[in-house]
Image 1: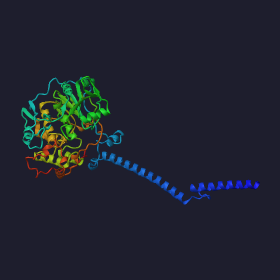
Image 2 (image 1 turned 180 degrees about the vertical axis):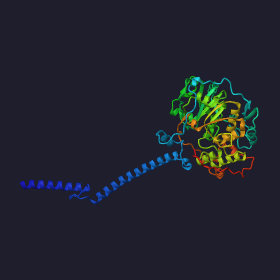
Image 3 (image 1 turned 45 degrees about the vertical axis):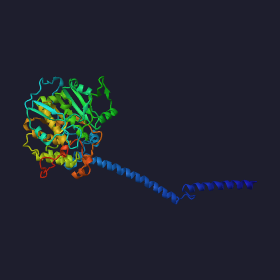
Image 4 (image 1 turned 90 degrees about the vertical axis):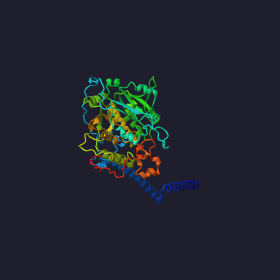
Length: 496
């Protein structure tokens, strides 16, 4: 009996020893405590993989940091070729600016009046001494060659009509957009609303490119005096309604804060940037009862009372048209070179645009010219709607309609053609930067036409061409442009 008990205990002990040996062997440890070869390889692979992931994460973070540091350095660099890499309209620059890692635009105090309540508003309009009566062509002369069967917003202006429009006379009738059936129709309720607007602050958002920004530092007097009008297309209206609160008044008008939304239906152009030039340049056509207007681009937040702006830039110096000087460029050909490098429009079409201006006698800007610059900062325009200013706006728009949508390339040319008859006040760029806070766009803009590098690409891919704008670039020009050589561009400043 004792022998049986001893054998039972021995068997149980043996089984426990065998089971422990089996577990240790399965776990990679033999009974003698040494690591098995398979377990050693497994540990090495685990450690190697963890190190690889950590190294990849560190390298990735270092690359991101290097890119950010390079972006900061390029935005601060005085070397033009590196400064050209800085996209000041992008979200990265906006983020770095908010963090205080890049220097904000150069600002200087604006010598505005102390109190909007004490500003004296002129009782009378500026006398019309040069152009006394201005009217507009509203029926499009549709071409009969079959290439276009419907009216165009800008009309089919021919080269002779364009040339005649620059010859100033007391009574004039010119192309000025808004051809019947050409698009950009305003709702009747908005037409009735803007009839009451004598003082206008206008802005625009197209293709959902921006979100509304509410002006600040607006006095009670200006709130009651000015109409704050935000012109939008249908895409932008839908985008705004999905992202901010839009309220509707008893008359069906739509509002975002202080801004009254003005919807333009049936956009006249393929290119959203060209659509945005309609309210910007033709403010007097959209709001014909307005006597004064201040235009600001949609990405800007106005931080100065508009009545103080009118007093500072118009009434104090007895001016009727004010616009800021460009920060970097005074020469149109230099601005064109910057546009090509930054892919703001198709390079060959910008060159063709500039060749036409060169053929027609536009010299590069020099200190011998009567203007401070041929290139403005067009994001803010302050004007009295005189007949001469309205004519200038029409001619400026016609150039944008005929050629490229880069309005800064056309502004100086129209000033040149009108000569001393058109007076403007071009104020310092540092004051311009003190009028607003700049916000980044919702996304980077791009269109197919911007990537075409040669005319051959347009021949092979006609779908790249705009079908309703820039037609002057595809209409045979009456002069011989083959021998035109564009002036050399010396990049002596930042690209801007």
